Length: 370
Ligand SMILES: Cc1cc2nc3c(=O)[nH]c(=O)nc-3n(C[C@H](O)[C@H](O)[C@H](O)COP(=O)(O)O)c2cc1C
Image 1 (spheres, protein in one colour):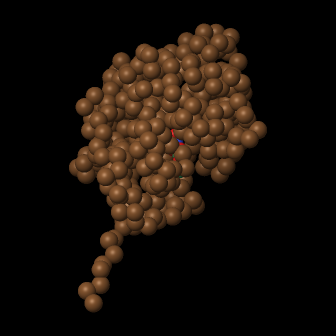
Image 2 (cartoon, rainbow, N blue to C red; image 1 turned 120 degrees about the horizontal axis):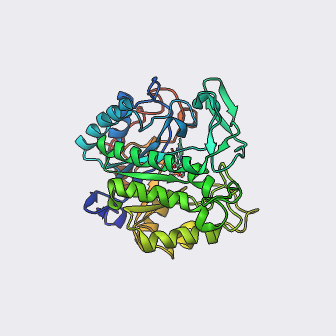
């Protein structure tokens, strides 16, 4: 079975060679239990256990205190965090791994607890209507305030600085988190963005923030080390866009024409779209037609469907979240068609080693000598 393309190396991002096309998807695990929200020894173990992935995408890492929305998420904006990530990257590289840092700004999906008692920021002053986990348990998201026009540039600059920090920490590249209803989507989607300046109104204006972030990050670390995650049919933390297909076609065509990203990751819809017929049901098939660069797909894949995607050429790489969380040696298990550990949902977020670094590696069954 290992003759399948998914197990073969691929070169992406200039000359970065990935040993296979199976990636570990970005996953928030809320285990940076310290004042600085810096990665710890536990993070070193967790990520280095998973270094057989062609590429590891880190947990969403806040680019600033303002970009934080959940308790104990690791960041990439202060010295302690950079030092913590350096140790993670040393271990991952010692194990022959390649790892990008996911750069995250939650925008309105936050609580004033994380913002020194102030309102979180967004494109507009609309409450996300969701819940975030704070030291007091689940609490409703705070109503944000709209960023002033001049402040948008500061946030763009925070992305730039975070990308520089990531490279300083030893990451092989970065991924801009443009998915799941966080700040980038809060600018893109007309269900949220009601601005009247250059960052609101037309599709071009609503996409301005994303492209300014891309330009700043690329200027800092190079396009070959920059990737982007989009979830065009997402309904998490957002009602998406009234002209979703038009919006994302514009974004992806522009990426095709003007950018030479390391890769673009597209997330398949994770919610029921029956009442949202204007959202693309099959994201990679619909938007893949506008993009000829390296494509990664994500969302509910298993061994067979992932192999098929890469064999058919519809995607170059497939990322796995829950299966990689539960199977540190997922590429080997897939290669051998070995049984998989089941992910335990109650230890996804928060806690310590349990459900984090204690998932067993596969042991080859012994053939009886009898
Ligand atoms: C515990 C957990 C944490 C997640 N955190 C992030 C995150 O930080 N950034 C992100 O883009 N997606 C995040 N996701 C979404 C996953 O990356 C992925 O899109 C989703 O789980 C579907 O992939 P899967 O079917 O392989 O699990 C998270 C998912 C899980 C289960």
